[in-house]
Image (cartoon, rainbow, N blue to C red; front, top):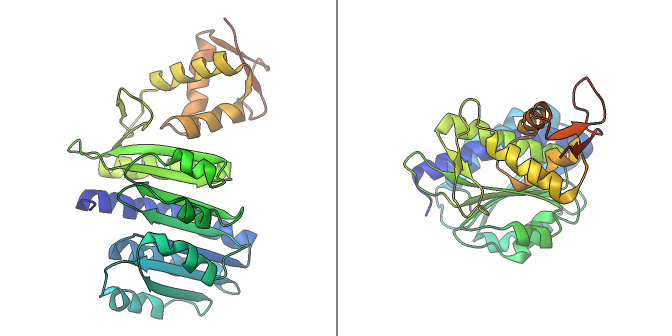
Length: 294
């Protein structure tokens, strides 16, 4: 069972990412679905308020919100006042059951072929069927809170871009793993920015679940970029010349840092003479190739 601090953290992260995802999804399609599985009552309320806050963009389109709740008898009463203020184009379905019912719920909602944002919270490992449903063919994105790494499972489910961090609460309490699966670099950047913003607000640090040392990164203020600088130099030596865009993507998928941090780390490597760039001056462009100098 998540602690109150973990619950607050997850709720803030959900709100930030959904706030970014929803208007983008409605620009791409006239239909969009939001699926919440394992979320607490406060998280469901917060998500509906995000949808209500985009009422102008929702009009003329169709938004479906699925809420899978295992034990929340008072949830209909709590969500009712928010539902009453939603545009007619928004449909809310409250369904009893655990997250493993997500595939049935998504299919019944007719989400196939349109953007789907899924938030799943499970105490242990998430099932392959749940992740396959969240992938929704090629139109889904999933924000996952699990007890352990889900990277391999997300890749197997068809998400080519996967990011993971392990939150560490102010009292040094571990809070599981946050994983994100997508096909969009922009969404990947957005969720990492959201993680850092929430972390700074709630005094949460992050570590890489794959790092055996368990080293944490403080995301409040200016981060220490030395670990990232070392990681990028190792990656460039291992993989050869890379475009700046590829270096940014590696930063988002293989470290706890942000895309902008990758730029600053590259500038440090350039200043130290460890790497060289194609152009002598100007900002680092995404298509510019970075090569190890020595």
